[in-house]
Image (tube, rainbow, N blue to C red):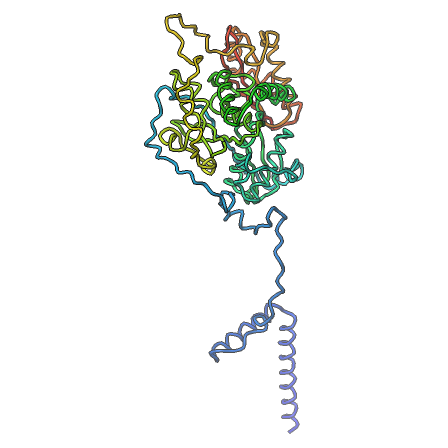
Length: 514
């Protein structure tokens, strides 16, 4: 009996030791406890079709918190940067213009090539997060233009945009006026089409911004955030005070002579520009400056000059862009009974008497076989006015008669002179060392960014100048100094020569320094 009691006590002690070990292992070893839990859940699943879920499944979910997105215009959700592919136009935009079939256009042979409009170009760039962080830290938004407003009767393109587009429009406009080379966007969730339309709207509404070029650059983060917009300026920006003074004086001289009814003022300005301007391609020909100041331009300069003068006279007049055998620009003007098309370029470049008013105050139907509106211009008002249509068709100006033949052709007759290009004899560069110095000074004084400017050289220097570019001498003598002194990472220069009278050449330079 005593032996049996000892045996029973031994068994009980062994069992107690076993269970104590198991409990300790479960409590102290996570892997073992996870194994036991998993085994238990499997066993319960095998013995019941439905059962109570584990405590991990029945825990209340954590309290939801509002997703925080960096503050942007409109407080759009983050996914909009990918899903928002809208044009950025106002929801209640109306048109009414019916475009003709391009295949049915019949461009008069005498006017073939009398266009020359240059569409806006955009360069898109994506940078890594490190570079994007640097940009957002160092770059300012510049003036946002939040206090600006634009009358829809005189600035129709602004009023085609939705609120976000208008906000970017105001920022672009304000920064161009300050001539800033770049600015940080007020709206990081903008898309390419929205930005394109905002820039085009500014460019079309404001011919007085003659110093801005027809291109710009957008910079994005890899996630699609729009962080920077770069602006490019033409050569008139190098001495903007002088350029603005010349521009204002040229415009004022025409404005001061215009009198009578709106129609009479319109007719006078149409005729005056036709008398002053010559159709000629040049580095500034997309601006009103090329027409009003230098009197040498293409359709863009004609149309922007006409729009600017008429607007200053208080008569709504818009740049209209589209296609007329090639990219082309003309005008839409508002008179008391409606809107009319006006193409000063084609009236000026025709050689027969009827051409002088052939394209003056016409309806959309009149333009149906020659002009097609494109891009934002399709939303300008339709032209259906009739009161002032065709009044001048039988009254061509005698001064527009074709020149009599028989005289020996002068090969330099149509070339611009040194003076018409805005230079004098003292500005002519006749030595390559002086050219290197002038080029260096112009780039150094302009700073970082992209810009353009012109110089005039003697024709005898042209071949030597070409060799300097072909042999990378300009890169060594000029750009190397710029990079070393400014600490910039990259610098480029291109040069296009344009022949002038008396053996001179105008050199148009395009520069970028970053």
